[in-house]
Image (cartoon, chains in turn green, brown):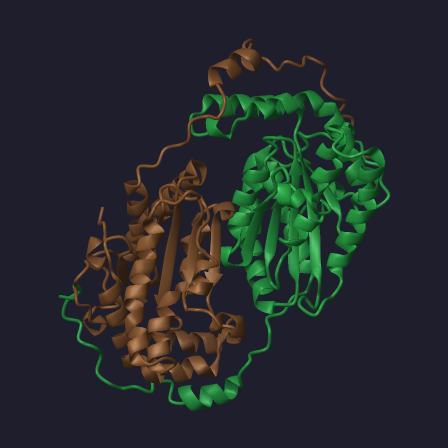
Length: 296
Length: 296
């Protein structure tokens, strides 16, 4: 099984997104990929159940992409493979007036995983070193300084705390589509009445900054892919590759945690003897009357 | 298609759960039920997407049951059919010290659906008229008074507000298992290392109050099934029937809302002309170099 380790950016690597093929399939075809993805989803469900049961750590999955890049789709597919009781999805929009009064990480901190939880960030702190840079929302020395702030922040998440004894791990995925693929997806959105509501002219206009975004993301990924919180660049022109790669990297990560179901809080043998010794329900009463369904 | 309307308790009906068969299948067999349930899940996904897009209302799904009755399972199956971006699951435990300082609805109000959201309550305000009654946590006049408080509260949820212009609808499901079925499920839990951690002796002890719970739930459902927020009693000994019935009632409810995708926020024709007139990407630059994947 391909581990897609080649998508994970090793710390210190200088990333240039324009040199990375958004169409890459690593030799996979669609059918095999979809079959493997379904297996990965089943495994993710098991591992997330374990994460939830173990109650020792959290997992934060950060999704960044250009518009139409597949952040929503990934939440639906990969997030949809998990038990919703243990999942939270947070979509970050333009900061509110309240959020603007605080440092850029303030609103991020409001939504970190609780014990045993998986949180998806649909956009994240990385907007503050990309869109903020491109539209000159802050001076260069400020957004440049944020790389270190983000690294320190993510490093801090990994540390054990009283509430989260094994800390929170972070997986960051950049869903890499080509400018042409974005065009196709916008066109699909404009032609489909069930998708038109998602369309904003601002998104189309933002296309003109495509090259700036590639540069900003390249720099952000270069500066903020760490051992603790690595970035993966996911070729995402093919949605089936995107789902395969993200699901596989997520499975690999969760497998690597060596999680265990917690020990029972009760003495199982004592319980078995006390309540289950004759392997019969303690109540031997005749079954309740089952005359009819309607409670008339 | 069976609408399972017979499971929905008409206001004014006196419910006696001991007269309702937890094994009822209404003529369905497992295969057909599972096939229909899968179709319902697909439809739920579409309708929830619409609810989320429409941003006019909320949906609250309340789950109550005896231990092992299938609340967690329903969240996983029915909730799992939805896009996690629009779903929240809230599990109510014994009230915290902080929660005890407030009225019993206080903590409930903290977790109501936001605009466009579906919220599952795993346990709910109905604990405060059942367990609270059985263990004498409050005097009879208090828990009896709560029926009206709950009805008023749920009626209020349905009302339009500035934030939620079409209000929040409420579906309440009692997952009805037999005492023998609970015994089987406890036994399964005790024999399965991946489930033992869920077992608490308190749950087993609570079984001795089975008849009291049936009475308390019967009364709660009798008093609090309203036109606005109906109760459904779901025969749940067969998990495949439980999922079929809950998914079908949910589909029927969402279909009945006649939701529409919102009008586009932009002038689609103008956008089409401005950006898509020649049906070609505006940028005709040669594609980016795609020499290799690894950003070395």
